[in-house]
Length: 499
Image 1 (cartoon, rainbow, N blue to C red):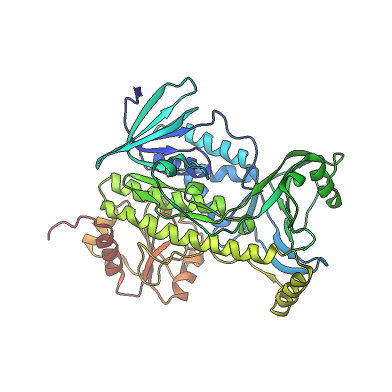
Image 2 (image 1 turned 180 degrees about the vertical axis):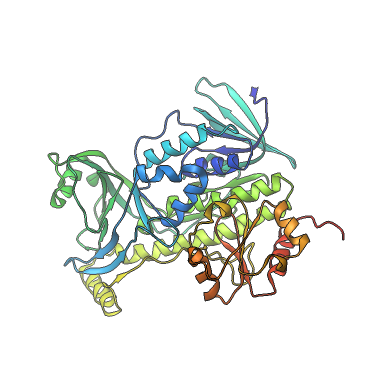
C-alpha cells in the first residue's frame, strides 16, 4: 500500500459539482484538500440541466463566477400546461434576480464540471487524483484515512483530519459508513432524451411541464443549443418499451425534433427517487450531495441542494480546523442541511403528485382546481428556502439579498450595521476579526446599499449578521449589535480572552 506523503486537512471523495465546489471553497480558505475520483475524465453526458440564482451565487463564491455566463444561459420562465395547453402555472424569471444572478440558468453539466476543474487546478492546496476507487475508510478519534484502489489493483492510503463523501447516489462512503436512507417510495420511470439542435431555436418560456394525462412530459433548456425532453412511463407500459432510439424519435417528433433538426445525444430510462440519509455525519466522515439525498426533478433542486450542502459545510470545517470554533459546530451541518433538504424532497414529491396524473378525469379536476385558485397568472419565483434550525438566532435563517459586499460575506461572517463604530465593543470587534469576520457600516442615505437597507428596514433592525453561506445568523435592533455579535461567539465556542 502506498500512503500519501502529506496528510490533507480534508479528503473529498467524488469530483462532481458538489465535491469540486467543496474542494475549491476549502482551498480558498487555505486548506489542503485531496480529491479522489473514480472516473479518469469528466463524465461527458449531462445529469443536472439548471441552477438557480442562489446557487449561482454559491458557485461564484467557489471562484467560477466569471465563467458562469460562458457555460449557462438565463431561463425566461417555467410553465405548467394542461392537456388543452392552458397555462396552469407561470413562473417568470428575471436576469437580475434577488441574489445578484439570473433567477434560473440552464447549463450543460460537463461544461460546468470542466469550469470547476480548471478552478481546482489553479489552487495550490488541492490535489485531484482520478482513477481511484475508495474501498475502505478507517478512522480514529483524531483522523480518518481513505483507502483507494487504482486500475492495476494497487492500493493507496490518504490520511486527513476529515473526509466528505460527495460520491453520488450509489455512494461508497455512505455504504462503508453504514448510513441508512429514508425512502418515501415515490418513484416513477421516465425516458430522458438530450438533444443538440442543428440550428438555434427560441423556446418561450425556456422550461415547460406538460401535465397531459396522455403522457406527462418535461421540456427544459440544457445550455446553448441543447435541450432535454423527459417522457413519463405510463401505467402498464414497460421501461423496455420506452428504452430505444426509435421510441425516442417518435415521442420527440411532435415537438419538431427529428434527425433532420437535432442530434440525439442520449436517450435512456431513469427512475426518480425521494430519499435522504438519516445521518450526515459519522465521526470524521460527512455526506453531501446525492450521497446524502435524492429527489424528483420537478423543482430542479438536486444539484443545487448538493452545492448548498458543501457551502454550509466548508466554512464550518475551516473554523474547526483552525481552532476558531468548537468541533460541535460541525454537528449543526446535519441539523441544518437534513431539515432543509427534507423540505426540498417533500416539495418535489408534492409537485410530482400533481404532475404525474394519468387519469383524464382526475387531471381535468386538477386543472380546474388550479385555475380556480389563481393558477395561470405570471408570478415571480419563490425566495430561497430559509434554514429553520441550527446556528441561528430566532428570526434568522433567511438568505440575504445579493449586494456589493457578497465577496466579504463569502470570505467569512459579515456584520452589516447602520450603527456607528462605537456600538460594537472592542472585545466583540477583536473576536469577530479573529474569526475572519468583517464589519460594514452603512449610511442609511446611500442607496448603493439599498438591498441591505431594505432588508434591515423590513425587519425594524439596525444590524444583520450574515454567515459565509449567505444565510442570516440574526438581526439586532439599535443598541443590541454587540449582544448579537457576542451571542455568535458564544454559540460557536470562540475563545474569549479574560478581562
